[in-house]
Length: 218
Image 1 (cartoon, rainbow, N blue to C red):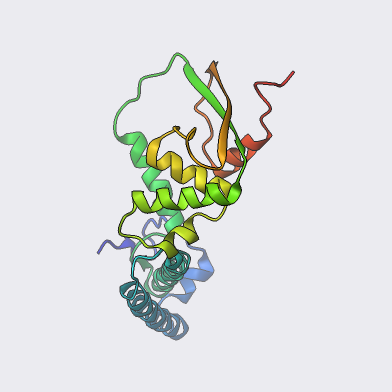
Image 2: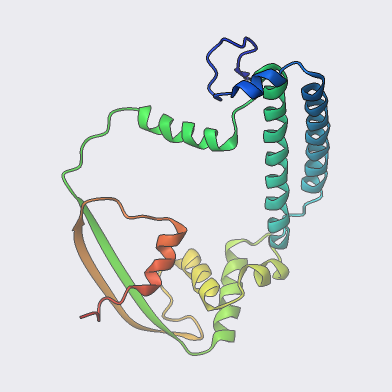
């Protein structure tokens, strides 16, 4: 297991400890907090393992699993931070630092060629939903064909509205939605544009696409 930081107080410390933090090292209070954080971490590991081992692979289990994983990570960070307070070294860096390191590693893999431009192909498909219930049912059926080991309950959790249904139909067969019940194709438009940067694929940017008016904009 990798140890980050050093026990020596005069050694370089990537965690930039304050003087007050250094004064806590090897004190009774820091030791007590360290042992308590370790007990809490071990308890979280056991709890998470028990919950995960009891999973059956159902869709409705996923939110609880994500929440359990988040609690485990928080306990791990708290334990590592407590060890840093106790003796000046951490077992692993905080998760945020891990993410930054991963991004940095990607940039160090090799020199990238400088792009002269970026060409984006923008496609918009418009469909009219004529029967939401039928479309949702078709989406659930598509989900079960894609994931044959799942059951009806999984499909009902995964597909709850027209948007979910379309996503599952696309996942199964691409954009061939014209024969799906409850939906009719209206039009398809395409634009090819030259841009200066790669499109933002964040959740916020995806939600903003709902405001795009083209191809009928002025």
